[in-house]
Length: 222
Image 1 (tube, rainbow, N blue to C red):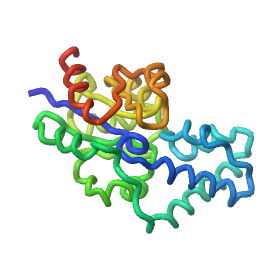
Image 2 (image 1 turned 90 degrees about the horizontal axis):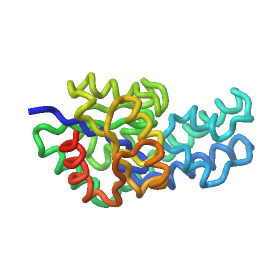
Image 3 (image 1 turned 90 degrees about the vertical axis):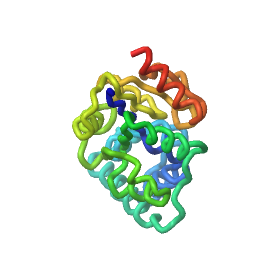
Image 4 (image 1 turned 180 degrees about the vertical axis):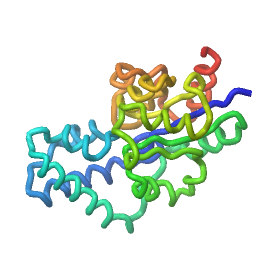
């Protein structure tokens, strides 16, 4: 029986954390006295590691100013950890439970969050034990570099030919392609279906209930 690895992005894919991330960036820019980019610009960089996201949002700032924004965001995020965690998207838990029930399927996450950030959003939903491999920004270059997915393959013993990346941004899709994965884009996150397909999505789904059939079709075709 061939192993099948399914790697999930977190923000915008499993967890509806956009409002929390937006507030963090807006607070960080205000704290540093720097004009904040608009909501659309902020949502467009969700999925990148924090330092890369800030550099992309504000390329005209000095390295010291960018580093100050990163630190301010982390301080705001840490201060907000006592607040209720962002919710899972509808159908996420059922989809994960269904996949985990398949003995040939292994689950992992690959996220631009830090390990502390990942624990903060997944632990309250009792999801940390769901994933055999958790790849975070502490240990890897930012998406779309394939390092996180390569590490997930090494940790699980799966092969790229049987692996699928599931995410809501073009960075997820590009990372999947760079690692030799198949890609499923989800339309409920932060990038449009058109942007997901341009980034390398093999399939774009509109609800979690469509995930299992999409996976089966991709694996059968592969």
